[in-house]
Image (cartoon, rainbow, N blue to C red):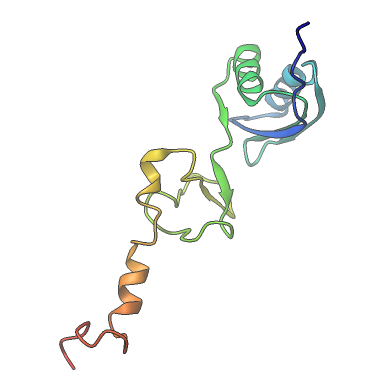
Length: 138
């Protein structure tokens, strides 16, 4: 016997550019008919579609792209209070919706830039009492 692996319930966030109510409706209808979808939320201002249900993220993205003709990608942003260094180069993104920064874990090229090696650490340890050789002026 072949047992079918049951999909887990998950929430998939997708970034899709929507200009008007028509686009919003088109995107919502494209996903609502999918098997396993229980809820669809569309936030046009943030260009974000949230799909909840027993679905695979890759299938949701490809379905939106195919049915609407729009470019769709998995939501690349995180709330900025979750990230250790939200203003580190590579993480901060001006195009991101307010209170969000780019997720460095998704793009491996950004992970090295988002580490604690940013300038914040260097400035705070420059005048440290723990390291007497840190400041030459004194």
